Length: 521
Image (cartoon, rainbow, N blue to C red; front, side):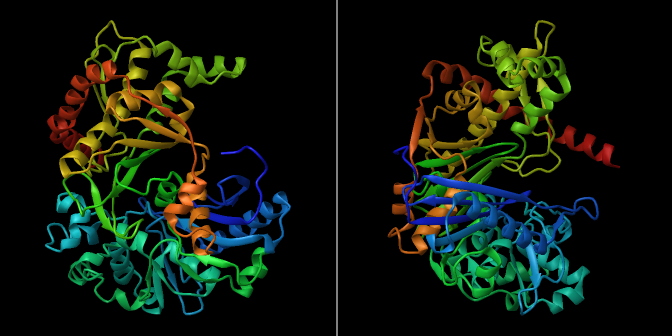
């Protein structure tokens, strides 16, 4: 991609993450013009609960848009298309005017655990979305939160004209249109086009069989034109009425679009405090240990699958903070990155860390076990091991976790030929190369680090008719900057240790559960 200054037309992407609203402006070949972010607050009224104010979201959007437009020097008429993403299963109860009736129940909120347990073992075909019916349903997902609201706040539930996900809240705020997006409807609400749409029997079993009256009938694919920006929204945001708005969806899958993972064979590797891997299949695959395949969830006519590690970069940070304060202090004095120091100390330790094996399940496990009571373990320690061995073993545990999930996908019929990576792990050349060596899969790095906002801009360009399709927009706007090939010799060395890692948790699961229950009780 040329490094020259971006030239119009320009499109705007809106990203509502867990901590902030981020606005980005790009041109049609994927060159970023500006980014602006505004934070908002999450409250935790009770243990396991998490809520945010939609009023705070809108104020943050106004602030971020104003800052982006001011710093870019653009006028409202220069923005030719808009799309957006938000966290998924952040449920908003709204009246007929679009006003929120209570704080939004956030994606991480697990108050609906009882309601989720009601559908364990349910025969609905939609349960193939959760490990082919083998993974326990999570309290994070839509029907269970709807049932909780109905049972615990019946006045609010009855008053709600719409009970929808955060991206669909934003659709209404921008366009005045009530729609659902296929992305979060399929991925988090069990919407199943292959089997008639909503699995009514599953919702009835959860206790939310009448919620469909509170859902819009229109379910849009990502990137389709929803309508124009309303006069009210345009005035509030300093933009132009009628600006085309394209259907948006969930933040993680906009990141998939922004990484150009829109065909089978590729998979995202989005790294940070956690790892998320998602990709496409031409066939409706499902199987134990992974989520999906979600019909039309990102690309019409394809099926999206996903796996994830609940704790990844967060475990490295824990190790740094708890055991490496001397390195952190020295790094601050010299201007070095403490992770660079740790990487240098661990670089010559052979694959497998001389027999030390961690499991990184410090905050439970999402896939392949979907076990909230999973906890981290370490084995193989001897007096010959050093702090550097432990640090490298933590790094390796994350890469092992990725490979264990890839094994589940391969058994389900999906071969991953290439990762496209983004996020914090890319700051460490050693660690991201380790991911390639352990999995044996090449890793591509792209030009734009903020793949989520770029994904929203790709949809904006498509909905405005500036590119013919989402795939063609991604081809024009996503650009490769590097490709890492796996080291075949190290891959062979790592195969034994991945096998050992895969055996650790199943062997200890009962003991770990007993201990977790004892501590909690």
